[in-house]
Length: 475
Image 1: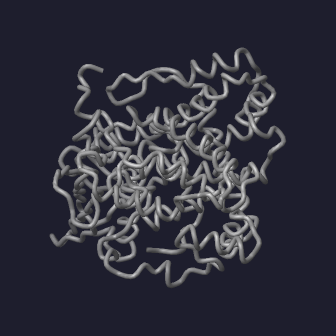
Image 2: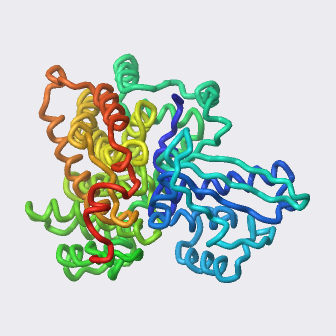
């Protein structure tokens, strides 16, 4: 597996509702049109077919996979597209049955006929998709991609080759396991965030790293702000009512602010009673994942389905634990969280289609627990212990979204993951690392074995659990 995964690979800015089913296919579509351009075949293309396989097919409609490939083929960037334009762009493609590939080459395209949903699985990964371009000379050009979780994609021809990131990585501290990371902190006498920061500035300037970390945070903050100030019913047919709005109103009352940053400062000045702490954390997590469910902009952390955990826990620190915390602590939190997520990706998976929800909410909870633990003064041993505790109590968690939508039980699970992360950090801080019985690497191995043993119907297929126990028509 690759050794060099940047924090910015683990914390990607994109559009909901799913990193593996929306962001990944979107990026695959962009990669395909880039290849067409490189091979000088774009202007020769008369038609494009998209075949979706396995989990991408089984829950693709609920996860807006069809939207994602159309937007990607149109050349839209998921990081910067105005989210209010998404429905208009997709509707225009559907009505006109025309696709402006990369915004510069118009072809005939029927969303109903040219995006084909196959229930069978391709061999490498549960999330497979194939793009086929029909050229003017009646030949075809195709590429197969796999969306492997967290917005990461691989092309089929690269799945059996050595990952070039491992060969060309410039990180001074190559980390594959938690033990590797711990050794570096001991030999260098640095915190985990300092080790990770040293790796990041080996690839980018300090200014670039700092600016990008803050851009990620501001996206998270804006997402929570939007979620707390949006009411109504989420799209998709489950008739799920947004709850963050009402919960937020009940907590903050009548307050004046004009921006997400002013909102944050307003909350910090609000007297939070003990019994309200869990409500605030839940409110922050709900807000993010309601925005995600409505095709809003979120930070994949490490996936869209678990995007609410990390911002909710970071907000907990800022508004409950340390009112004086600023950019330094925010960047420290994100650095630690990103590194823990990368270790899970290298040693197991962050894809619910491969590992169930333990690979999403479980990993995000571990990431948040570790980051919070360092901010609260934990040693590197305790930071890794916090991640282990959080994951240990998510082992075996299934992925069974009703209707293939990232709503039930996904939205509420983010609140549970955030609260468990806070609890795990507190437990780790009160524990002597010498008494730890389960190393983080061992729980990562266990998670991967659990994933491999898990029945496929509990891995984001909507063929088991709540997905079949609850009839969508009754919602």
